Amino acid sequence: MARRDLSNFTIRPMHKKDIGAVSELAMLANPYAKEDKYREHIVDELEENPDLAFVAVDKDRVVGYVQGDTRGSKTTLEDIAVAKEYQGMGIGQQLLKTELTALKKRGSKMVFAEVHYKNAGAIPFYYKNSFRIIGFLQDYFGAGDDAVILKLVF
Image (cartoon, rainbow, N blue to C red):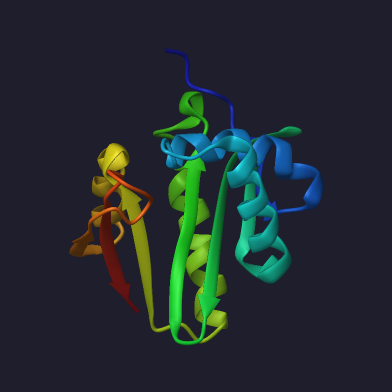
């Protein structure tokens, strides 16, 4: 496979105009979700935490995104996803770095990630970035849809 030219690649804050592309990418991180319902979740998170939502853009195409959430003392990495043809190029790393910087600005000391068991292939990515498994929650995403819970302490 030919290496993509990422000279036009940038990370910027997410805007409402990005929601269509982001909701498609969300299905990579959330294989259990219904796209239309999850789209509402993405919009809600963007409205509640606009400073914690970023997209990766190659030329004019959204190729990845990340969203975070803080509620009281709990900080959660809501989603991180990169289009399949862009995976393995460091885009996910840059999105995560951008998100963690934004969370630290908010005063976060630790971050949780909840990974659907069907997306367990994402766990090495989190481990590479110092997250560690702290447990599992049965039926967290719905009946039969368990979560692996990871935590990063700054």
